[in-house]
Image (cartoon, rainbow, N blue to C red; front, side, top):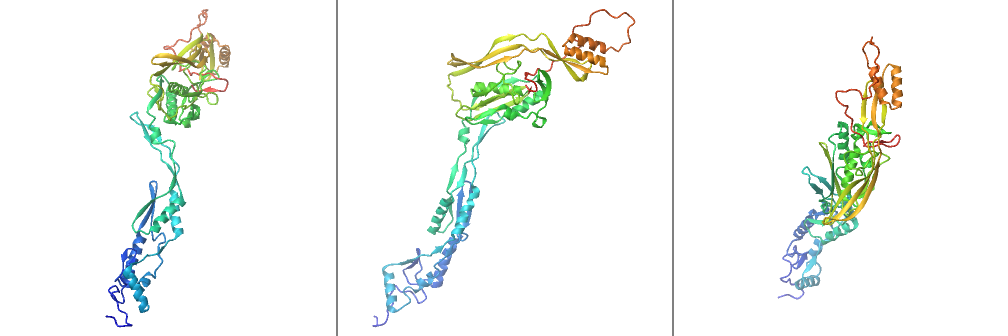
Length: 508
């Protein structure tokens, strides 16, 4: 029984003057019956748990992390414990009674209020900008097993800082302890060359092989060097390829050796001799792949490693072989030059009908016999007595290259691919002119100027006599008209396949 004027505590009052009334909650945690110190310890544990929680932002394969405390987390309503401690326990009797009556009817919930440092959050998000990247194109390469392999490309990423910051703040506002990962918002730019795109390069579109086994050491090195510079080329749809742009400069520093070539109609040693066989072999592979040929020139004189009109000459600044990938997919050019065999194979995605086939036919349309005269060239670094044939006579010829198209083995169409004209050329001899005998030198130069091989042979024979003068009457037989007697016919160096205007060198 309650005495009038005296406040009677109910069963719902706090257990003692130092405890928090029943029905009081902080978040979902009941703190009724706790002392103020106990409630404060609980709140501090919650603040600590939240502050030590880690937020991670992922961007692609990269990530950054910070705790809530590092992002500026602070407990703002630090008077919370004092406020809830006074609920139903302070004030006059009527107030205390009313508050306890309210708690009896409905629990009272309080929240821990936090503040964050927006500058720290912004800086955290913007640190992800270091992960911005440009797209990395994929690559394709030929393995040692002769198979093509693909490395896929990598997307380029650009951070959207504002959108990522909004996500971070949304998570922080939820105020849920525990580690959390946020996926950054970013713009993604895919490369043109992806593993999916490159995986289409599985078909052989065209292949061609020529033989350079008879080449000199220097020429063979040039063929191998030039081939290596083209090997591994990847052409995107619509991309154009220039052989000259890829293989120049023709210098020792760029891996080239001296080898025979033509300059102003005669044989000289120049760096890069033999490179035309590289462009020619590639030309034949391109024809079979039916890529678009933009520029091609025939040699001035016939070459011996392909049929007429199947060659493609190179002369820096004058002649080039240029083609374009006119397919819808990338093409990969594999080139090899090894032990005298030169090959180019073009890989891509085959889209031509399976019942369609092609062939290329070289047709000779005219012929001119080799020039019957000869050409003599003074060799100023060789002594008198040196006489060597350095070029065989070349037949003049005109030719046309035809492309036949078949469906199911039946000829459907014939197309002219190109036409070529090859000049006739005389045999060329080099004549040594170095001697102390000025009269002999003068006579040799005169004979060379007249392209008189018989007179040169006579002068060489006379000039080389070292026997004492004969007492018998001089011979009345006419001079020999044959070439000087040799135990073995001098081997003619490989004939470079090109004659060009003055001051232009075709390094065949």
